Structures are given as structure tokens and as C-alpha cells.
Length: 452
Ligand SMILES: [Cu+2]
Image (tube, rainbow, N blue to C red; front, side):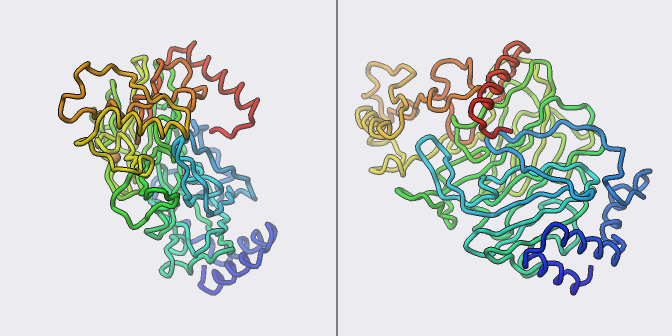
């Protein structure tokens, strides 16, 4: 659309025109440009396909039903259809985020969630995001990996004027791609405050082989100085590591039925790369932030290096029953440096004694009911060994604090083995799998708790 029309459209949106108002605008907009830009984008992806002449996604009957991705501990952004357009209302705002049972931070997120709720659409759909800025400063939304017209790219000063506090801005485009994309603020410090979320474009025709379970995990890291709740976005030292906004053992285990095919999608938007490792299974890399990879390129692996700004999709057959860990393998990301909780020292062990360690854990335990006793045995002469304790002093059993249907049936003190950037996939025989689903249903019925 022309710059004049775009400005008119944006100004109209800012003035708060209702649904009818934007529809009229959009119709005018469609008529004026004949959807030429979007058609060009669509053709790019579907050249040679019999469907490329389609102009309205709503008329499409080529889309197969898909298995929606689940984003544990985050959930989905609801949508509504408006005249064939899938509409999402997204609000950028400050969010109090409990990242561990004993740590709540002042993050920024979208629509009450950090990371932001997952947007799920299907290839070919037209999408409108009504974006409201309730942050104290200007921002914008960038569609990472999506091939959208330049005026939808969400870069302040380059492709649009910044969205000022209290303003509403409307993004609208047709999604001609399939894959794992994300949305985020296009501002370095805002990204490190948590402003990111998944944007999943399911393919028109299901991927082959079809996955029975599809899970999304967002990798983030936080620098929260002692006694502080606000992430230090200028820091290069990160002391809290999260999957979907929470540290283990708060991460909700992923459930998979024995014999099913599982798809895991990871997204990294931080300052570090993370080697994500799956125990006891081999997976294949089936996609990146650019979309599905051809099957001829798949090879077995069990650790996928998550570079910054990348998405990686892996799949495996859940052949082996068990609680299989999924975690970043950087040693310091398999824990949180709890210097802000321990206060009197940073994590180091040279002058550590068990008595001191236990006393520190005692004082920490006063603020949250976890068990600080060592779940694993220590040697009788442990104190005489230089370097003791290492892991023993960090063992924090808090099974009850983090209990939820998905943790049902795990061995006692399981939570003492879970720290930092960790979760697990629980491969369960059908009966046990169904029993946990029943518990989930009962729980959501009794609490109306929003779960994906
Ligand atoms: Cu890591």
C-alpha cells in the first residue's frame, strides 16, 4: 500500500476505530493494491502448486487438520476470525514472572505472559495482529523468519515508526511459509527483558512422518543482581536459565505416549548458544528457523546446538519408557547461580564446608519449603577432601512445591536432580499416560487454570 494510505491506516488505528473501521480500511487497502505484494510473496512459496491462484485463505480447502504445538508453562494466544482473517490481540506489558519457586522477577512480556503466548496459524492464512503497547517506552513487533512485506517487518525507524506507549498498531500479512518462527521486539535490551514468543505456521499438508506430540520450548537467560528483581540487560553474566520462562524443577515435564512420534521445537533468543541434549534417544533435525528440512538431510544426533536467533526442530520415536532429560549441557546452565539468594558469597567451593553449605541452604529453605538435606549420601570423611562439597550442597528436593499432574509418579526427590535449563520428556505406557491426562483434566476443571 502507499505510504499515505499506510499512515492513514495506522493513524486510524491509533484513534481507536473499531472492528468495522479496520475492515473498511482493509477492504480499501485490498482494492487499491490488488493484494499485489502479498500475491508476490505467496507465489514465491507455492510456484508450481495448483493452489497458487488462491486469493483468500478462507476459501481454501487444501489444509489438513494439524496437531497443534503445545508450549508448556506458556500457552497459546487466542484468536478470532474476522472475514477470513485470523486476528490476534497482543499486548506488550510488564509481567511479574515467577521463574523459580523462590524467585520472581520483573520481566516484560506479551499479554500477561513471559515469554509471550504462542501464535499458531496455518500456511496460507491471512493474519492480523492488533498490537497494543503498554510498556513505558516505544517498541514494535518483528516477525522473525517470516517473509512479510517490508512495512510489516517491525523495525523501528526503518520499516515503521516506533509504537509509542498506549498506542495500537496493526500488523497484517499472509503466511505463505510453514515452520517455526518467532515474534520479538526489535530492540536489544527489550529482547533481554523477555519480549519474545513463538509464531508457528503449520503446513497446509501435514509433515511426513506425522508427529503425535509437538512441543515448543523457548530458551532464555537472565542476569538478576543480588537483591534485585529487574533483569540487568547490560550484563554478560547470566545467573538464571529458563525453559519457557521457568527454571527446573518448575519446568512442566513433556508427556509422550510410548510408541508415539515426538516433535520438539526449540527457540533461542539470548546472549549464549545452548547445546540441548536429550537422554536415552536419538533424534533427527527436521527443521530450522527457515522451515522443514528435506528428509534426505536428516541424520541421527542427540544434542542440537541452539545458536542465538535460531529455531531447531527435532523428532524422535518414543520407543523407551522413562523420564528422559532434555537440558542445556553447558555445566553452568544445568544450575542457576544463586548468588542473589546466598548473598554472602558467589558460587565457589574453595572455602566451603558442609556446615556452611547446610546453613546457607537452611536460610534459603526458610523462604520456601524445600528439603535441604542431601538426598544423596556423602562420605564419612567428606570434610577432609579438598573441594567438598560440589554438587552435594546444591541438592534441593522440592517435589511438593512443584507438584503438578505431569510430575505424578516420578521417583521421590526427583526435583533434586533438576536445575536451570532443564526439563524432561516422560515416555509413558498408554495406561500411565492416560492416568496423567485424567489428572490434568480434573485439575483444570477444579482450578480453571489456563494450560496449553
Ligand atoms: Cu546453555
